[in-house]
Amino acid sequence: MTNLVAQNDFREQLREQLTAQVLSERELLVANYIVDSLDDDGYLRIPLEDLADNLSFLHQILVSDDELQAQLETVQSLEPTGVGARDLRECLMLQIEAKSNRTPHIHNAWRIVNAHLNDVATRNYPNMVAALGITSAEVKDAIELITKLNPKPIDSDERQLYKNQNIIPELIVEKIEDDTFKVALLNSNMELRLSPGMMAKLDQLRASKPAGPQQGTVQYMKSKLNSAVWFFDMIRLRENSMLLTMQAIVNLQPEYFESGDPKRMRPMGLKDVAEQTGFDVSTISRVTSSKYAQTDFGVVHLKSLFNQGMAKADGNLVTNKEIMDCIETIIAKEDKQHPISDQEIVEKLAEQGYLLARRTIAKYREILHIPSAKMRKLV
Image 1 (cartoon, rainbow, N blue to C red):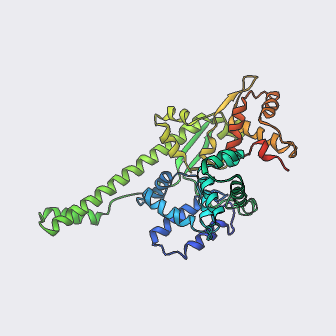
Image 2: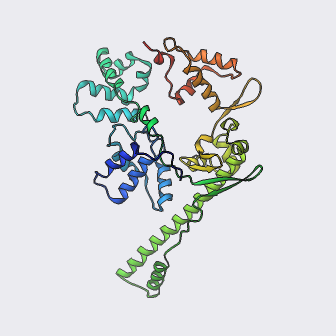
Image 3: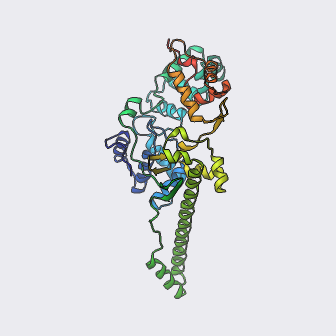
């Protein structure tokens, strides 16, 4: 386990709030796992089905999506309001719904966030007026309320102060000689087995040819043992999928694992790994979601290794991450009174050999959560 920061962070504050809730031991376990899965800005960006899979494996219990949904709602009821949201819309909705006074402004703000968040971003007031049947003044009043909400439950100062939680890698990649790596599970020594006492008891009951209530007991025990066998099989299947996927990633990124230098990562998508392993793309996505690997140069988030790419003007392949880093650098240096347009970014990148369309720049900006030039302008 890599302890990134040994100090009290916002997750610990959330866990303290959970102890005041009326929760069973299992519910508290699930809620705490959700808290530990939050991003540094307080969002939950891991799909619930992936969380259910990870939690079931970690604690050797069967956890359903419905259980996670119920406890996600518990986490979303904590302070700061908006924590645990899965996207911006849900974050703002949680904050609006938490307001005790139900004024027309709040009601209109709820309707706008619920169905017209894109119109807010583009300041398309006429569309909201027509769709909601309210006046332009009412739209502006509602948007004024919306702009006072916090788009990130955990602000930048807190994120910097409380940088990340304990991370427990599930995989390890070790270099054993030049260009040769060993991939293993960190908990591969864990042994799962059925209780000998339970098996003996079941055999004894079967031999006695039970009837009546005892027959029901036998059926109950058989169903539980069948569930356990199924669970063990799923664990073994998951472990095998993780090992094959990690090995494929290492095979596709030898220069990166040799050096630890992100600039030496090759363009690689889920499809590339799927082709190497024979798994579906959806399986690769699930296996790599929220997974970490211990390497010679530190702990690596598997999702960060996936980068689509493109060829520069000189023919060299570059990753999307490299391109997005360039976009961030260009925007960071702009005059905030006269922010640079997407077309101007296209031209500046072309000077560096990156040939991109304007719509591609817009897509990358959205991924980086960077507003348009119009929205970045300081008045």
